[in-house]
Image (cartoon, rainbow, N blue to C red):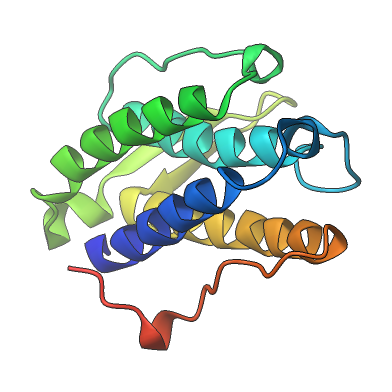
Length: 156
């Protein structure tokens, strides 16, 4: 599991570096899909990771307003802090932990439960999904997107 998080973090860092060469107006420009902009979409994947990891650790969730994120450095700082949080959880990962469950109430009042393993799989797939959106937007800007090809990446 940790290898896939390392993969996602590496791709995320590459996207952040990619953003450094993009005009600020393009990073915050409202777009169709994702969370509406490049900056907000990057923030969103980090925020979802933080929310789920804090929930399964039974710790308070950081509440951050996506509309108040205005600078790439804010995304970088949030990413670095969230990676530390997630990594500290993953280093103790074992078969017993992956079968633990968290119960959530749906909007309709129905209770539903998820294993920790399923939640981590969701976090991984969620980020990969949004990275695809960033790739489309990069092409719309006439820029080469970050390669997300796992087979050619080294992540340890």
